[in-house]
Length: 142
Image (cartoon, rainbow, N blue to C red; front, side, top):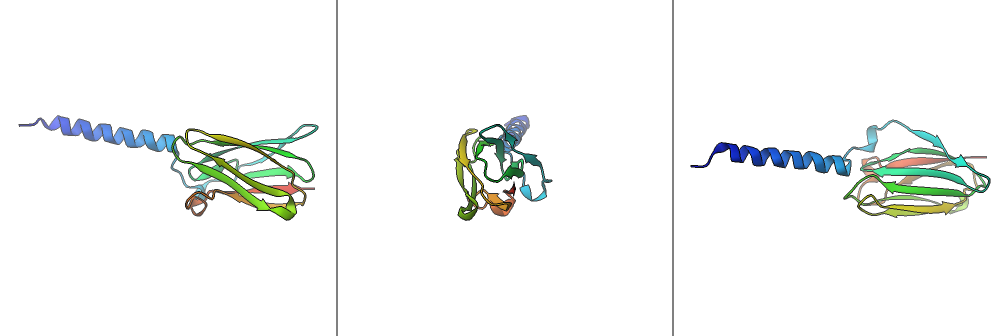
C-alpha cells in the first residue's frame, strides 16, 4: 500500500514549480497596467532610454523624446523563457524600430532619430502579445 503523503509531496512540488515558472516569465497582462511615463535622458549627442519588456507589458510604457535628436534605445527582456519584441514603424517620422529580444533575459540596443512631433505606438509583434496589452507610446515633442 502506498503512503498518501508521497502524492501530496508531488502535488506540492508541482505547484511550487508552476509558481516559480510564472514568476520567472512574468505572466501579467498589460491591459490593466497604469501608464508609466519617462522622458529620455539627454546628453550632448544622444537621448538615452531603457525599456524592459515583460509578458505582456513594457516598463516604461510611455516615453517622451525630442524631435531631431538621435535616440539610443536599450530594450531588455525581463522574462527568462518568453521572447519579445519592440516594434514601431513610422518612416515619415524617422522611427523604424524592430528590436527582438530573445529568451534568457536578452537585450538589444537600437538607434533612431524621430523627426516629427506626435504620438507613435510601439508594440510586441510576437504571437498575440499586443492583443494582451503589450503596447506603449513614444511621445515626440518639438
